[in-house]
Length: 135
Length: 129
Image (cartoon, rainbow over all chains, first blue to last red; front, side, top):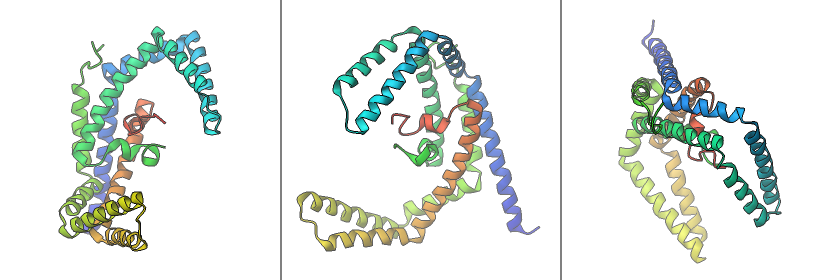
């Protein structure tokens, strides 16, 4: 086999090895206390019908207000009402627990991404976000 | 369960280090690291970038002061071209793209297992928009 062809094959193996390590990392995250706590909080949130109903209503309102604003029909009173609704909603126990668990899991994920970015010299999150950034 | 969510992170950090080591061994990341080093140490490229930065700053200032001249626009354009035509810069940008493409593939396999988009969760916007 030509040396060049051997190099290509080695390259493919090395990529496959890296993907396998990526899977192992994801499984370790999946088994971590933060991930388990997040899953439990998510299940509890989904089981809470009342909070779910209010959350959906809130998201609908949020979208309406966003559309209105985009079309030049923004209303500060509506923004304030929406903010107030979110404040009330986020005080409910299940949602509060969910948000806290989500934040803690995100903290762990940020540490992971930070280690990768620093070692490789490419911002992992920026490289992997759709459109590579905000909006 | 973790008392404050810090829980026991060490298995995750251990797997992260192993993943980073494997990443660094791939051709696309190795090529990127080499290209980045050339890009950061090439004196010609450094000079071109400093020149571009200077001209872009002057351009912006002139634009604010309302004293922008046609030659100034042309100067910035030329400096940009000198940068984008430089082989070391070109190689760096291409290598970064290729490494980024592979990182996206790793993100896909991680996200598949987690059930949500890992890269997006840690991304710059953080879903804010």
